[in-house]
Length: 275
Ligand SMILES: C[S@@+](CC[C@H](N)C(=O)[O-])C[C@H]1O[C@@H](n2cnc3c(N)ncnc32)[C@H](O)[C@@H]1O
Image 1 (cartoon, rainbow, N blue to C red):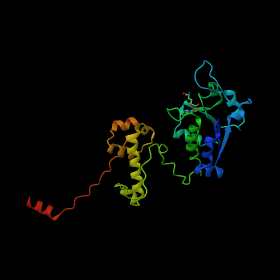
Image 2: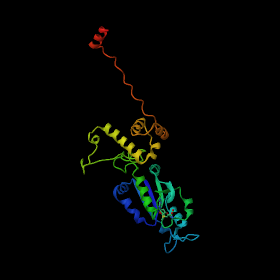
Image 3: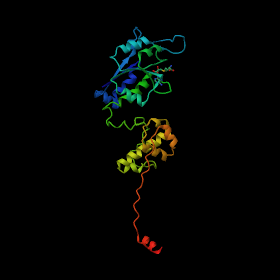
Image 4: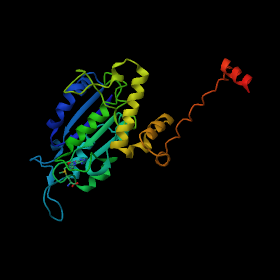
């Protein structure tokens, strides 16, 4: 069981993520537990005021560190206390994989101008979901909840389904198709309808390589490329120098075709007799 504790001023924004769709089912089956903590309950004043004006002046309000501290102290110990901030380390699939091995994650969701900077002493890491600014940490927390929870055993129906996902395999995912077989003049690649599992797997790997090469070549150095992948990338126009730069293994040596001894034909013997 993995418990997610969200410290937020708007718990109702996150509640549906814990009660609907696959995560709702995972929570009902006891695979995950979502604990919504309203930081206002820890305001420590009659008006449930959690923020104040910034020292030094300027626009907006800042969430008080003592409120965050009291809210965090109300929780059982967490493996990680994560602060959502645009200034944090970029959240990636690797981080999701790492967090999915924990048993209790506590998330601090900011609002307004964010938290008093002294909150940094209360957290184990700071995460950003990208180079943009949302109005609060709840959107970031929902992204992290979805990305982490789906990696927990039993949460997805098909245990293998996340292994080929973009980033999990090191590459972007291959394109998928379903019915109808013809739509708006566009068909489905024949290989996918042929029922040959080996050919389908090879086609998908090739598509994942081609997509990653054209859209996110920055992923290739850490994609764990195989010699067959290198051969495929060479066929796509990548040079040996580029492969070496990415640390990719050399392509398999071309198979040597054994020459069968030439059978002596009547024509040969006729040739010899003539000479
Ligand atoms: C309006 S933002 C504050 C932005 C802050 N003044 C800054 O420029 O860094 C309010 C809250 O939204 C959350 N937030 C906004 N953008 C985020 C991002 N890219 N990643 C993670 N959290 C974010 C943080 O919790 C932040 O405290």
